[in-house]
Image (cartoon, rainbow, N blue to C red; front, side):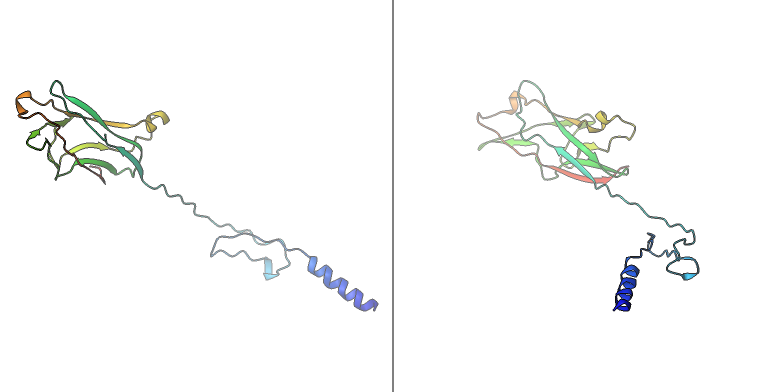
Length: 181
């Protein structure tokens, strides 16, 4: 009986023995000296770990939902881009859709209007605004400030209006990300 208890005690002690484990990169194996698994002083080795992070592109472009034209003065409105984070070789293009007509219509007449930005007159298919990621040298406040392009709708000439009434139209913008250049 004493031999059985002694044998069980030996197995219990053997089960409680600890072994040091070493973390390694995939493909790198660190072996104990001489291949002895109970040798806790392995050969010195090193391994590398590749660290990655992916920053997805992001941006918010705000187009005014409504513009009311005037026959007494030009009307200005802003297109803005905020939280712009693109690749360094990319830019946001805001173009006037090629299917847009620069006209407002009533049930019996239509009136053409002019549209321009800081670079000149705009026509369907033209670029109304261009935005890029703020430069890394800008302050945090400058980086988070909205980027702005001002559009000017020319005043409606009084002789262009034949009939009284409500005139409406839709101006469609196409927004895309393109290679800067």
